[in-house]
Every structure is written in structure tokens, then in C-alpha cells.
Length: 312
Image (tube, rainbow, N blue to C red; front, side):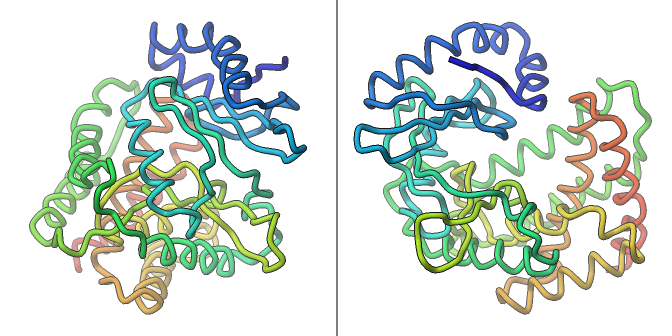
């Protein structure tokens, strides 16, 4: 059995210290145990999975499935499972089996990420937005979903404390602006308007539906949150970062935010607030993982749009 981790998963496991190393050591046993538990035959490892191990497997009827083994982290495995069950295939990958006590999920097999589809970036954003809108219709009652306030808490703690642990210089004004925007969203959000939020709907978490006649895309790896829809849309400002090099960064961010607001009826400024927070947070996190050059792209973008945000 070929147990191969992605580079991102390997780095995240190392960042966890002893728990991460134990997870790597126990992974072959966990995979074998899960295959036996669900009557699956291992086929091959699957690329992707920055916080998990993914394997392509086959059931007794010859149908291919995806087996996912999550690593220990701040994320709540039961929340991801709850999110998948709440969506029930609407905008999200279909869940088939799960065991939160063993950090195991078995899902339908989907196709390639939308990032590799050949679609224009605007078409990709449109497809991801469509999947999100479908998932937001899910009933969140009676599910073990994480309150979105915890995501805001995590982001605030990350922004306040992680930069001091990394040997890089960060613009303090940019970080303070991100913290101010989190505080603004806390004061403005309405819990009665919270939806099933994905938490990280990027172009590599949006996969083609391969078992239906109609073309479409579904999201994978949800955080399983109940939060404001603006947070999910803010992620779409953070992604496809190369487009910000081809135009004025602040103008491009504003253009994209206006389009998202028009398509979803979600407030533009709320989308921009979460987008900026995510841009800064992602830059810091990439630096934490050792992806210094990639981190600079996000941090430079954050610095470029910070001044414009003070005028909003």
C-alpha cells in the first residue's frame, strides 16, 4: 500500500509536533483498518489533502470511492462530517460513511479541481458561487456544526500571536486593520441569518461532478460551520491571487466583491472585510508553514489594498 502525503500535509503534520508525527506513524494502520471496516479495496493515493490523507478505493460493487483520514488539528472532525450530512450532496460532495472517533470519512469520487478545468477565472468564481448558494440552503438545525464565532476567534488569535513567532517582518498597520475588521463584523453580524458555511471554498476544493449527465461542481473539505455567508464569499476574494498582478489590486478586489454581492445579495462591505482578513491571515499562515515566497504574494496584496480599505 502506497502511503504518500502531499507536501502541505507533511509540513502541517511537522508543525503539529509530536501529535503530527504519531499520526504519520499510525497512518498505514488507520488506512488498513478503515478499508476493512467499510469493505473497500485500496487502489492508489490521491493528490491533495493539505490536512489529511486521501486514497482512491473500490467497494464490492466496483464503484470507486474516496477514503479520507484527517490529521489532528484545531478543526473538529465531527463538524466536517456534520456539514457534509447537512448539505446532503447539495453543493458539497456526498458523504457515504464516517467515523469521527477514528477521523475517517468515505465519500463519492468526484473529478478534477475547477482550477484545472480550463475555464476562465470569472467562470470558475461563478461555479464556486453557485455551489455555495446551493449549500447555503441546507437545514443546520440538529447538526453538530461549529459556531462561526469560533472562526472569528481563531483568526483574531492567529493575527495577534502568530507573527511574533515567525522570523519575518509584517506590516503592523495591515494586521491592526484586519483585527479592526473582525471586530466590525462581530458588531454587525446577525445570527439568525447564519447559514451552513464552508469556510474554505477555493479553486482546489471545488471538484467536477463526474457521475451525472449535467456538468457541475461540488465543494469538498468543509469546516462545518454556521456562519454568515459573507465569510465564504470573502474567501473568493483571497483566491486566484495571480489576477491581482494584472490590474490595480484594490480595483480588482472591489470589482470582484461587487459582482459577488450582486449575484448573492450579500453586503459588499461584509465580503470585502472577510476577504481582507483572509488575505492577511493566509499570508501569515503560509509563512508559518515555510512557504515564504507564496506568503509574500498575499502580504503584498494585503498591503496594497489596506489603504483603500481605510477609505470605506
